[in-house]
Image (tube, rainbow, N blue to C red; front, side, top):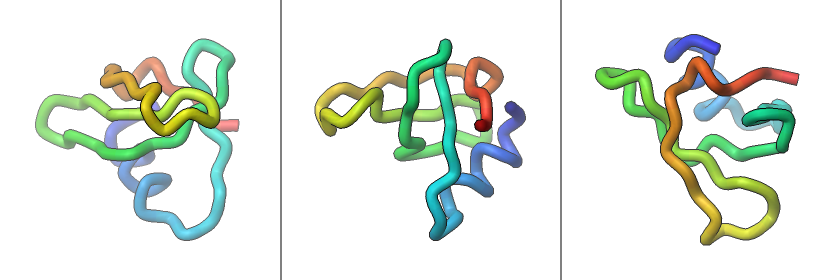
Length: 59
């Protein structure tokens, strides 16, 4: 995924499925300058990771 699409998903009001290495995640923040995204993994709000947006997959 590219930074532009990650940002679109982050700002969208509907639920768009995103996965990190096959596991569902929620995008919590997008750092456009560095191409990074903070994501919540699974259902636990405290389980977050900051990853390169290229590792994220839509669908």
